[in-house]
Image (cartoon, rainbow, N blue to C red; front, top):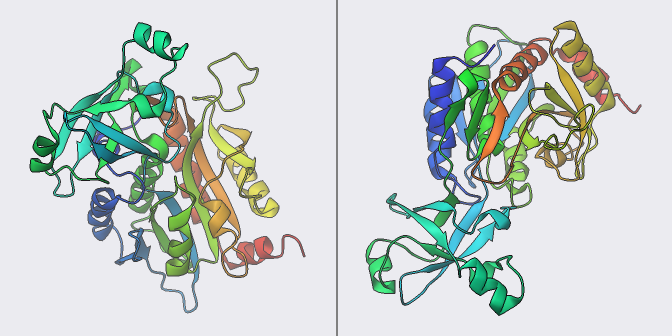
Length: 362
């Protein structure tokens, strides 16, 4: 049960777009183009979050929000040195230890892309100078082949231009495993598109909003304005979380290929318990493999959940190895199963369930 060629093409397209926090426009434009063919309307907030709207024929429909995030971690240009090397500022939780020697991509505001690498002192020289081999960020330089400050600027490079660690999309092991940058959270963006395709001919008793928020990686900022835009009665948040199976846990507490993640607690959010148990029951009924999970970090659910008088919210996640690097690894069956899970959950929602979730703590 691996991904179709159509899905793989969509995955390659969206994971390879460059869109760090605050500069997600290329990703959001690609999503809006897809949404326009699958929904009744496409709406945006002024920060750039974008949503497809599938309207119900019901007289008084409630609103369901299915939310991913479009941004990825990366860097911005902080300073251009006289010799053309660039110093960067990290945006989001980029794993800085992977930078020395990494290949990188820079995108100018005009859309020109440059490829390069990360340069540092040689390992021996670093140890002699600092007494250690770990490279501090202020001694990391981004090299795109420019020979001077003037050369870089003539090519459109300015302070604030975005840079990502390169991570080509690759299909491994006959389609079982998928390697790329930016699965966090282009996974959710891709799943949202395929959810709309699954529901194209399905009449729902609610207005369905499927989309992607900006600036999740820098503090769930986009979810605040997106929640104001949609004003949901219920939300499902799609995200890609860190696996913890590189050492042999039994069972793995977040293992790729072990099923969708049922997040029962994290640093920003405690789920609606009635909603969570309903989801677990649905997973069991449909034979969808799952694993319970908790996290010190958070997702946009933490923000959407606290909007207005409170929004019952659920996370629907898969896990990946090497999160916040250019070499994130996911399992294809996890993706397929998560799409099955979200489709099943959305198609079973009704006003009675919404009221049950709302009265969870009554």
